[in-house]
Length: 514
Image (tube, rainbow, N blue to C red; front, side):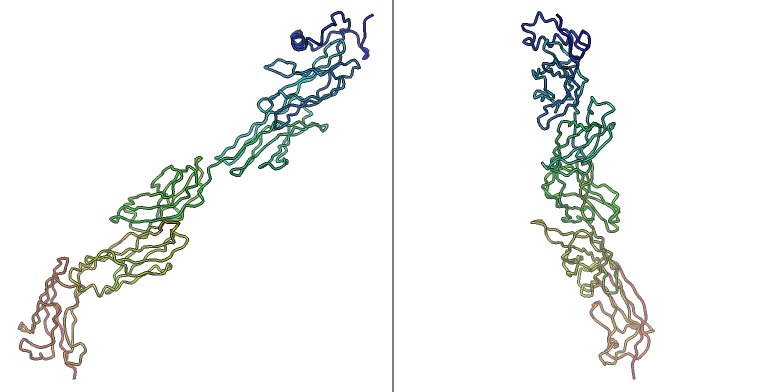
């Protein structure tokens, strides 16, 4: 007598159990069929319902959960995994009450693994395969340029329209996983923005079924390794050689990784359009640049060092390194020096004023407060020194506190002022012996190299003559007699230290007070 199934259906061939599948089953599990060659039961049990598959982080194992076959004659279940498009049995469970399984040979960290489950009865009839389910494969990478972590996942397959949503779970530096984002079932990407440097971010994407089931993807961890940005870039020293070539140094953080350094220049501290130099280096403490700005040296210049990472993003910038170009103006027997306030340093210790002439090189004149922008140089003491050509050059030096062992100071461009040789002839004096305005002499702003002074009366008779610029007329004639009050003619010829010839003819009035 032939056996019938308790589910009451007639005898049928096992749907879904193809000859290839049976061949795989026979190949992998021959012990199931030993001693049953004469079995007459050929009715397949109904299949179980695979509810979900989920990845077990961090191993990549896959756990399956199903509802059992509704037939009473069930001897166990066979677990199949998709391998290159073929369902290959990975294990057989001889437990009719089994509703779950953990596949420890899965590689769900690397691939999206697909599964089906089939039931078999005591006569080794194989049920049709359950509906297939495929794990969700998550991929993540760190974009160091944008400081973001893009996420993309393959999506959970098996629930179709019953898939309700995805939840992205995130752990930072080993902290418990917390929801980071919840997305609709049609969305398979997400992005963590503003990722911190040097941290470990781990992600899992959890798929949700409308009836409450959930399935986790593999775990994907990302370490945000980034070259640290330099913590500082400081203006170091600045000097101008031959009033043409500017040499600048900057002090940078040696702990920073490789970076591109761009030196810019302009005439406004906030707008520096000219690129002077671009270099890529790593671990440098002192960077040196040279520049020949040409005509732009006619006014104050600003330099700034910009530091970019490998992605072309600016990380840090220096203060505007100020190249002072002082103005020098004549002011009677003095020179006025004006300059803008330097912006190179956070703290300025002092400003020093230096002067050079044909008589000496740069000599310190004064040390001023950091707030000063004006200095008056009285040059009276230089006017009559031999060799003074009337050329005066000035330099302003700004000094800042040193950084570590490195000095920090900047010397300005050194503009020069040429004071033309000049002479003034007084038009009157009172030679009465009272000690006030008793003598007459030309007034120079320099010491003449050659000098000849002649004073005559209106008839051309010489009353006084001298080739010594320090000798003055006391109002007497060549015999030592006082001249009467009146007007006399002055003839002057002189040659300045620069070779300029000065000739003057004028009158001077002798006044004899009563």
